[in-house]
Image (cartoon, rainbow, N blue to C red; front, side, top):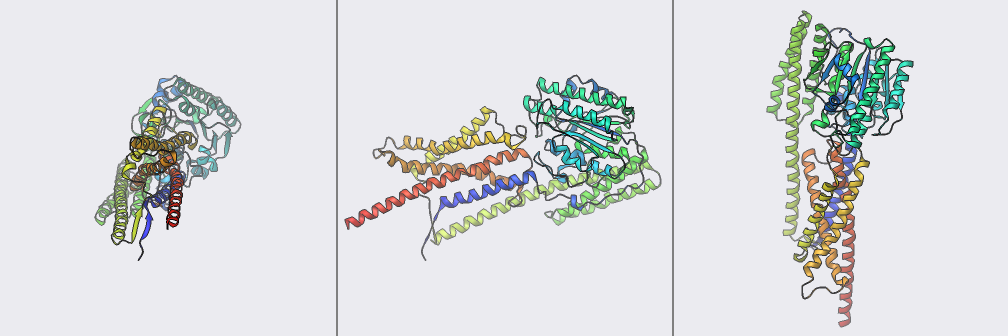
Length: 617
C-alpha cells in the first residue's frame, strides 16, 4: 500500500480557518439572538390571584433618563427630582440587570424579567419581545397607555400595546436631543392624556459616551433632564392630575468616568430609581435594600391590582407602597407560585445532574409546596400576616434553590464540555500516531519548520502580537464591555489591529532570517535566493500567530460549549471574537498564497532539475 503524503500546514490552516469562521458566524448570530438552552418562557403558564386585590393607583407617569448614574445625580443641582424624592422613596442600591446595556435593561424593566427569560443580551436585539410586557397586561383593561420616545429600544418593548405612541426622530447616542422629546411629550400629554404615560430621555447617556461620566457635559445633561422632568410635572399639576399620579423616575445603567458601560463595575451598574406620589407611603425615605431593574414593574402592577405575568421573576417592593395587608398577601402567594413554577420547569430542563443531586431538589420541593399550601389556608382564615410570612419563605427558598441549580448546572456543563473536548483531541492524536506508525501517511510541511527558520518564525509572531497589544494599550482601544456599544465603534480599531498584525506577521520574520543568515559563508547573495527563506518564514510566523487565536477558541468552547451551541454572554465578547475569529481567519489567506508561491517555486525547481538530468543522460 502506497504511503499518502499529507501536508500538515494545509490541513492546519484549513482546520482553523473553518473553526474560526464558523465560530465568528455563530458569535455574530448568537450575539443578537441568543439561543438560551435553559429559557423557560415557552413552558410557563399563568398563575391566578387567590382573590381580588385593591387598586391604589391607576395613573402612572414613568420618566426614564438613559445612563444616569446614582452618585452623579446626587452631586448635581436637580430641584425637580429632589421634589419627587422628598415626597417618595429613593432607592440607593438600585442596579442594572447584567450585562449593563440599554436594551438588556429596557427588556428587563418592561417585562419584570431577567435575561435568562427575555433572551436580550445586547443592544443589537431589535425585534419584539416574546413574553408579556407591562403594557401588554394593561392592554387587557380599559386603562390607556402612552409612550413618547426617540430611537427604537423602548418601541421594541412597548409599541405593540401602546395606545398613544409618539416617535421622536433623534440621533443615536446624540446630544441635545431631549428638548425634542420634551416638546413632543408636553404636546401629547396635553392633547392625548393617557392614564399610563412613559417619556424617555437619552442626552445623559449620549453625553456620557462622548465626554465621560465625570465630565461637566454629563452633569449638565442631568441638569437639563431635571428641567424637562419639572416641566412635565408642572403640566400634570396644571391639568389637575399630579395628585392622582404615581411618578417613577429611573435609569437603566450608570456610566464610567471615562465613558461607556456594559460591565460589572459600580459606576456602570449603579442606576437611579425614585418612586413618588400616589400610593407611595414613604416620604423622603431612602431605601438601601438591593433592588433590581426587574422589580419595578411587578411593584407597579401590585399597586394597580393587576396580575403578574408568569415570566415576571422580579420582586415586589412591599415596604414602600401603600397596599393593604390583604393585597400584599394575595401577591405574596402569586409570587411564591411563580417562582416555584420557574424552579420546577428549570429542574426538568437540566439533564446533567446526577440522580443523587436531583434527589436533593426533589426532597426540598415538598417543603416549598407545603409553605404555599399553608399560606393559602391562612389566607382563607384571614390570617394575612401569617400568609405573607409563609409565602415569602416559599418564594425565598424557591429563589435559593433556583440559584443553586443554575450554579450546579453551569459547573457540570463546563466539566462535561472540557472532558468532551479533551477526549476528541486525544482520539485525533491517537489516530494520527497509529497511521504514522503503520506508515500509511507521511506528514510534510514545505520545509517550513526547519531548525534555521523556527527562531525567526517564533520571534516574528510573538513580536507582532506584542506590538498589537501595545498599540491597543497606548491608543486606548479597550476590549472591555465599557468601550463599545456598536459594531461600528469597534470596527476601526479591530481593522487597524488586523492589518498591523498581518504586515508584521509576514515581514518581521524576514528581518530575523536576514540577521540569522547574513554572516554565514554560504549565505544567499540575491533576493531570489533569499526569497525561499523569506516565504517559508512568513508561513511559519502566521502558523504560530494562529495558535493564540485557536487556543482562545478552544478556551471559549470549554467555557460556553461547542458548535452548534456557541453563545455569547455579552456584546463586549463579540468585539474580541470579531478580531480573533472573523478577521484573524483571513490572515490564513495570505498563508495559502505564500504556500502556493513556495509550491510553484519547488515545482519549477523540480522540473529544472529533471531537465538537467535528462540532458546529462
